[in-house]
Structure formats: structure tokens, C-alpha cells
Image (cartoon, rainbow, N blue to C red; front, side, top):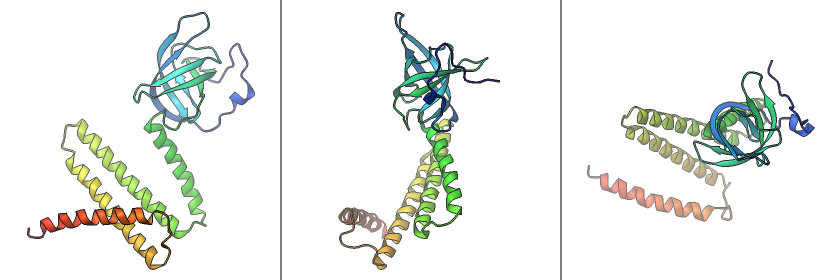
Length: 229
């Protein structure tokens, strides 16, 4: 059975406790490090489990525990520094590392999606227990629905690009969904005004008024150009 093993130097107790659950993803990275008295080393690796604070890297070499690695995400080019905290695996060489500065972005969009999905599932359980303000709950539901539809459009757009098909129709669906969402937000704000929940001193009222007036002027131009059609 695979397990963390300390190597020559014992790990500090704080390193043994993982601060958050890891997510299984594959992130190609470039690792650079230097051992005192030796030439700098560089090797391609794969992160196979990641979280905000670190990862498990699968690589050919096993940098000594305590070594500082400079990691580069091959997809995004983003860099981060990490400390080797453990060696794992009896068959595959795996290195557990801890980022010197926790990052929500370094491991890429797949990690962020997996993490957000997990948080949404936990939030759903809390919502089902009751106690949420119905208005806030409705706002949350609408926001999640918008994200879901946008994610589907992005997925379809990428698929059509890969297959060299026209993606214009998919982008028009995204615009249509944006207009639907904007209409709904305006209707909700109108209801808040009717219920006297918005006052003159409510923050961002001037910015909203300027944006709505500018949008209305552009919409009238479009509608006016189509009246005789």
C-alpha cells in the first residue's frame, strides 16, 4: 500500500496535516530546483492531485525533502514556488509539495471548476436545511442558472472550433442568454423600487442610471432602424 514516507529527514508535524482536500486533475508543469554544490536541475512533471496549498507531482527525480522548487504551469505560463514535504509511492515516483504562497489560479481552470463544484454541493446541503432569505435564494438560483447556461455555450463553442464548424450560432445563444438575464435584473430592480427598498442614497444608483440611459439610447437606435422592416 502506498503511503507517505519521511525519507532521511523527519517532516515537521505541521507538514503532515493537509489543510484542504486535494482534487484529482492532470496539470503539466515544469519543475526547476538546485541542490547546493550541484548544477541547477529542470524536469517536466505532472500534478495529479492539487489544492490551494500544494499538490502531488509525478516526476522521474525525487528532490530532497525541504527543496524549494520553481514550478511553471505549462498551459498558462504562471509560476509559483513550492517546498518538497514528502515522497510518495513505491512504484511511481511522486513528490508532495506545498506552495509557499497559496494560489487559486496556479493549477488552472479545471481545478477551480472541481473546487467550485464541491463547494456548491456543500452549499446545496446547507440551503436544503432552511433558513435562507427567499430573495437571496432566488438571486443565487438565477446566478447559478446563468453560469450553467454560459458554461454550456462555452463548451459547445470549443467543440465546434475543434471540429472546424461555425461557432457564430453558439455565440448568438450566449448573447440571447445575456439579454434575458439583463431583462430579469431590470425587472427585479423595478420591483425593489416599487417596494421602496431602493433610496436616493443607495450606493451605485448614479452609475446604474448612466448605464441604463446609455443602453436605452443604443437600443432605441436599433429598434428605430428596424421599424420599417
